[in-house]
Length: 137
Image (cartoon, rainbow, N blue to C red; front, side, top):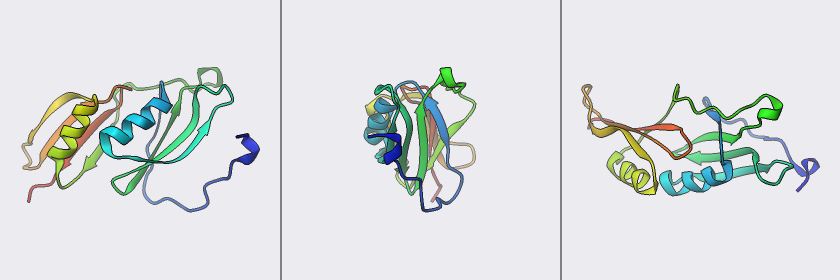
C-alpha cells in the first residue's frame, strides 16, 4: 500500500487522544488487543516495511494512537513513565487480571485506594504505564 492510497481521517474524534511512540508498534497492537480488548482501527506502515508510522485503536469507548519511533526524523521512542493511560471500568478486577496474564507488570497492586475506588497501575512490555480504576459503588 502506497502513501497515495491513504485517506485522511474524516470524522472528528471526541475528547483528547493519547498518542505515543513505542519500539515495536506492530507487536504493541497485538498486545493491546490481547491485554485490554482494544480493536485496531487504522494502520499505516512505514516505507521500511518494519515499523508503523501510525496505529489507531479503540478501547473502552475511546481512541488512542501510537507509532514506532523514527529518530532519523527527530521522533525517538519515548516511554519515560511521565504519563499513564487510565481506564475507568466497572469490573476492574477482570480487566486487571487479563492485562497481567497478557504480560503487564504491576506497579501498584490493584486494591482499594484511600479515596474508596479500586485502583492499580501496571507497565506494559513496551514501557507504557496503565492504571485501572473501578468507581466505588
